[in-house]
Image 1 (cartoon, rainbow, N blue to C red):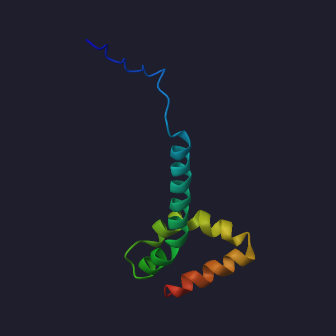
Image 2: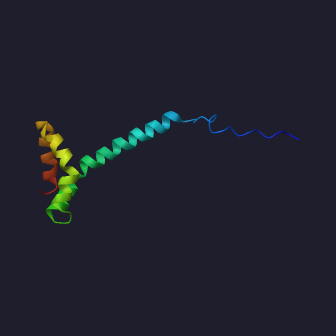
Image 3: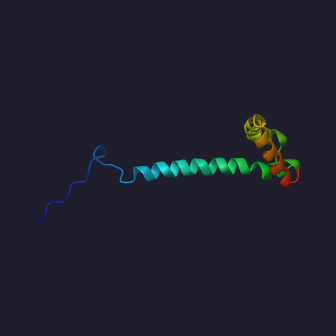
Length: 87
């Protein structure tokens, strides 16, 4: 009878793809930030139509607006992008 190989314990087990997991996390965070930044346009449209309240809009996008206000070029791009959505 052939001996069965023993399964490694949790301490002995090593992740065969550690860099891939880290890359997936970084990519996920990057994509989430892009979605957050680019969602300001549609959210502005929804707020202007009263579908979401301005209080919610200000709470969610206030930090982004405050950050953009520190950089005139970024602020101009934000205003242009928001303008594309009808405000």
